Length: 283
Ligand SMILES: Nc1nc2c(ncn2[C@@H]2O[C@H](COP(=O)(O)OP(=O)(O)OP(=O)(O)O)[C@@H](O)[C@H]2O)c(=O)[nH]1
Ligand SMILES: [Mg+2]
Image (cartoon, rainbow, N blue to C red; front, side, top):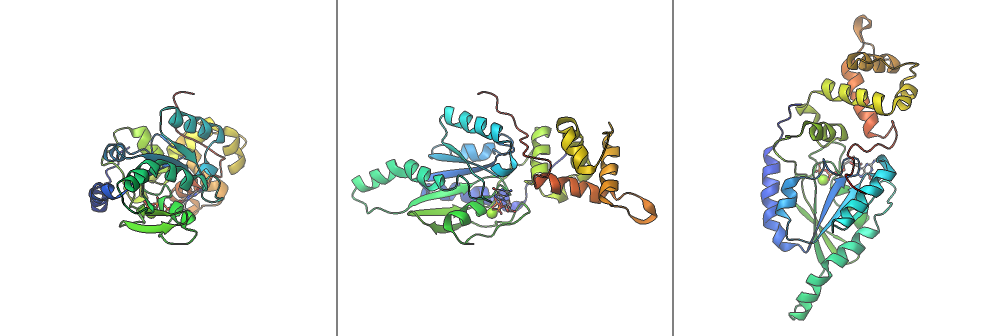
């Protein structure tokens, strides 16, 4: 898979993150629970090295619950506080401010012992595009303070938002690394919606996804497209999706573009079940 996507606004965002990091007490790194490894940007790790950090595994409603539990264990065992949340139902969200305040406590204590007045804990929310950073902030603020959206690249600038519990949160634009050296990670980022559809080949990605689903979750695929048997060929699978959905264009030809879009859309909506693409190594 050939993806070269590093728009200027991301380079700018990275610079601004570096500058603003000195203002914050804690960093929240939002990851996609379906791809906790592939959605970790190595750049973010490097920039935020010295800051207390909370990992939030978001979109748990779409991920395999057993694997989410194992991922959380993995993070916690390696000394990184982590919590699983589902922002649609709100599950797990209440824990986030509690954990952030715990992580900020040493800094707050040092401010007070230096004779400074107590202030709200400041926290920067970081992550790759479309993982739900702005959505998390809105949920904690209990209002639509930050703009959110279905596509990656919605948030363009940094913004402070005060939330309940004496916490100031900074929303940031999603940051993705310039090269996707690991083609498997690039594929996973594309299917989960972190990469703009304009910069990858939708037939290649959707074809590969439906093939993988047919191999890993054959019953779900058969049921979804009312198929008795699954063909081996990727092209044939996309064609069958089109027939099953009635995507027939002029001359009775299957509209493969619509089929590809539909596969991606339904996968992202969790229509094939709760699926995690990255496996934890231990635990
Ligand atoms: N199913 C599901 N969808 C979610 C969840 N959280 C957020 N979303 C969806 O994810 C999409 C992206 O949310 P945003 O908050 O805009 O993402 P972001 O990380 O701020 O994205 P950028 O600003 O583009 O970097 C939206 O369409 C949300 O509805 C969740 O827990 N479950
Ligand atoms: Mg955003």
